[in-house]
Length: 193
Image (cartoon, rainbow, N blue to C red; front, side, top):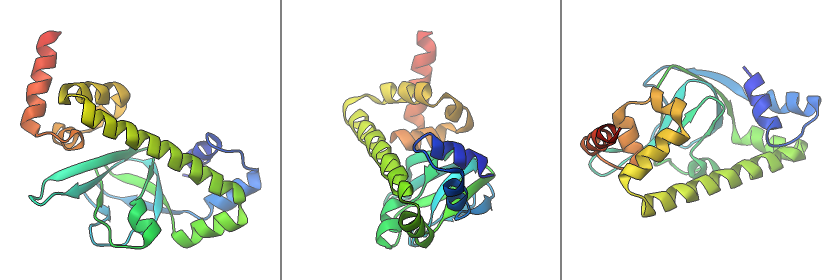
């Protein structure tokens, strides 16, 4: 279960075998069934998670109850509501399993313990935070400057394995377009082939 986490850590920083074991032992394994929630709007997020199996969606409901998906998290991805987790405030987000999933969770207390006792862990989370900010910035620029058609093609090219595991409704909610509009985009792309 922690083997994937160890690989993820070593892709960002270098830890001794002992440091890696100490850090990995701070995580609790959880099994989340499809359509069950890891977090609901209004709850305080008390974890950062690392997905070892399955797929999650992180989303917000607009005033009409329509899902607006911020991101998906599959194997080898981290997941949390960083605002709620960091500031200990009620979440505006839902984190829901799209598939039966397995996830490793670390609490804020245990993360702080890691920061104090394993100084390299602070670098790990700084590096991951920088990469996340860069990805979110690219997504914002794409949403402002690219057409829905371009964003759809980019999504398929960037996440081919993820694309196969999602419904058109989920992809549309991620792209910020209606399911019907996505159907028109798909028909247009197919007719060009």
